[in-house]
Length: 248
Length: 307
Picture 1: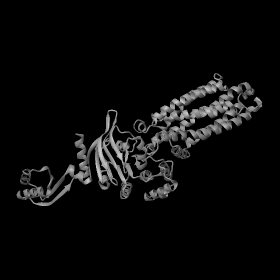
Picture 2: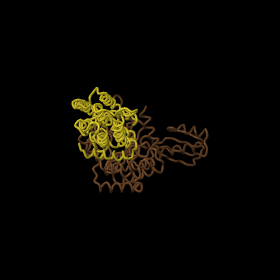
Picture 3: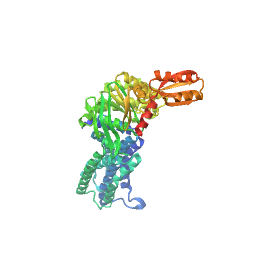
């Protein structure tokens, strides 16, 4: 496999993304918005009607759960891009010409994957940096120390977020073969965030303590296993003949 | 340059292409005609190594279609223009061409040179930085051809290159194909446009799942349709009609004072017709021999094949 070919395809997609407002909004605005809103919530929660601010014990449940929220973004944002980059190209009828070039199926798939993976990851990590700085600012006085950075956050952001993003891309490749509309692909593609959302809610309710490193590693292992499974299915789905003769 | 032998493609129980055998010489413009669903696009897709063949053989130059090791080499040496131009509307004309040039491993100077040459030839150089989405259909079609040529391929596959174009844009595209023909490129042209095929193709094949006929446009016209003699008389009469009916004429039609009849050897058959008319007291104004058009030939061959 020639990585240069995949990079050419990804670079072309990056150029296209710059012209698509909905993609720019999803990739840039959403993570930034979340990164600012979550610290604000943490700062003001409980203060209405003369109540007290959240206590350190509550913060220790909510902070890791809020960090986990980036996993949901990692499942959601790549879906927006992947659905465009594959279904969009299918709808615009440019996929056949691309398939006729001297590139292998794997090179095209990797190029599309990189295009859908890198911008969200960069944006999520950028947003997470803002989140951690703001969160430290609003919780430092109550905790007596800076909660971020820490190893659990590192596991979430550098291991689980990429795994969730990859999973989202692979899922969208599979979905792309079954739909012929970008919006439908986005909707079906984002179904993947439901289980992640479930874990997030369980974390907020402290049913699955997300500040526990072993829990994070178990979830990472599950994500890795699902990734491997989806990778093989996606690779099987993304074959020239399948795309040209069986995809809707 | 392109050779197929018993090339067959089946999708489950459906046979899309059945035992196709043909040969396209280097530098030839080869027209591929056939009704919708005849297997033209499937054939092109097989030859471009986009889909697999079920059986049979096909070669492009020294490479074997269906051999995984040769697939990339074939795709590198061919240019492909699908029936949908398949351009990126958000990118400029230059960026579209540059993207494909990169995928074919053209260096930066090579890409710059070929993009400038192609866009200038097609009258699009001034629009090189305009997003393709703002282009007219004809401009997109021309740019689509340029994309297929950016790596200077020896063989070009074009699927309906003038479909849905206005006459002026279609003429520009046809003229461009003729320019490519002068450059001795081998062009495999899928088309529904019989007039276009007649004007620019050296050889034509008519496909209707299997090969119905192949040859030069003139060969095809003669093979299926033969010729017609049209005799314009001053007037007809019962005696003239009776005299003509006594001759062994094929498909005789009399409309007013005009007689049309199929002929094989006009030099002898026309003499007998004119003699019969004079003998019955008639007068002949003109005698014209016309060959059947490619359209008539095509329809006759395809209908015969359907039966």
